[in-house]
Length: 231
Image (cartoon, rainbow, N blue to C red):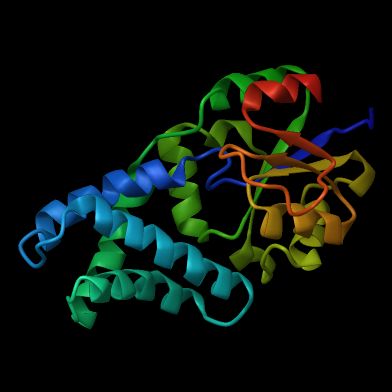
C-alpha cells in the first residue's frame, strides 16, 4: 500500500450532497417566486434545473463559458422550459439561490465518521473544488466540514479548473505535499479522476450512484466506510 499522507477531496457530490441541498433551496424559491408563474409541479422543475446545471458545468469546466454565465443561465434555461421568459427574474433567482444554498447542511452517509477516522490516523485533508470560493467556504462552515481541512483549493484561486493538471499542481504546492504521498477522492470521473491522472496522482472514485466506469481509477468505493479498507 502506498504511503499516502495528503488526501485531496472534492466537495460537491462527494462530501456535500449538492443535489439534496439544491432541491431544498429550489423548493423554497419555487414556492415563494415561481409557483404562481407556472402550472408545473416542483419536481419537474427541479429535474430540469439539474439537467441544465450539469450541462452548463461541463461547458464551464471545458472553458466554453464563464462563471457569471453559468450562474444565471442554468436558471434562465430552466425557466424557459416552463415558458417563463424573464431574464431579470432568472438573474434575481440565481443570486438568491447562491445565497441560500450554502446554508444547507446535508452531507453523504458516513461523511463525518470517515473524516474523524482519517484525522485520527493522522492524514492531512484538503479540498480541490471547481466551485466558487465564497460559496464553498460558506458550505464548509455551515455544514461543520470546515474543521477537517487544511487547504481549500478552488478554481478561482488557482486560475485553473479540474481536470486541468495546473489546479492539481497548484494544490500540491499549496499543501506542501508530493505526488507519491497524495490521493485524490472525488465523484466525477471527468474532472476528479481524469484530472488526478493528468497530474500523476492516485485516485479514489467515490461512486455514490453506481455510475458505470469510464476510466480505471486506482480505487473505487460506493460509500465512505469502504475507505477503511484503503486507508
